[in-house]
Amino acid sequence: MALNDNIKKFREEKNLTQQQLADKLYVSRQTVCRWENGSRCPDLITAKKLALELDVSMDELISDEDVNDMQVNYGIWKSERIKEKKHLQTLQKKILDFIQIVGAVFLAITILLRVQLDMRVPGWCTIICFIIVAVAFLCNFIVSKKLREM
Image 1 (cartoon, rainbow, N blue to C red):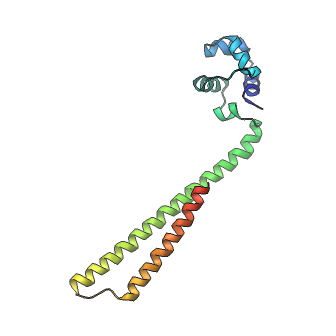
Image 2: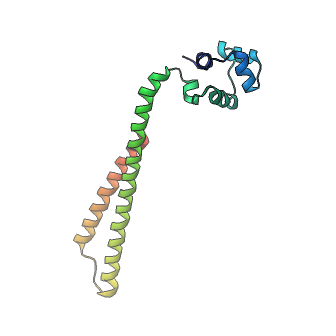
């Protein structure tokens, strides 16, 4: 189903004639007729007004799918995808916060040892911090890649 079919279908569901719909949108009956036969399309602003008058969303108005199929397939799929995206964004934020905390702790230890105790940071401490941060960056890279794919 295309835009022209949807306009006609939704208009008839609202029990409106072409003239009644035209009057509500401040266009001519011929304009509505042209929309319905597919020779013309409403501009974006008029399409929004049309969707409001017909009490449908813009997606429903311009969709080439049946509305029930769209709600079952697209609506559920979209909500799951949005939930997954929010989860990945939250995970990414936690990973970046973890990297900041590890960096701040390592910096604090380094300053404490150098300034207060006049010691160098042990090599094993530097290596462990480097490995932890590298793993966190790898996790962040994987999460970022999944987010880009969505």
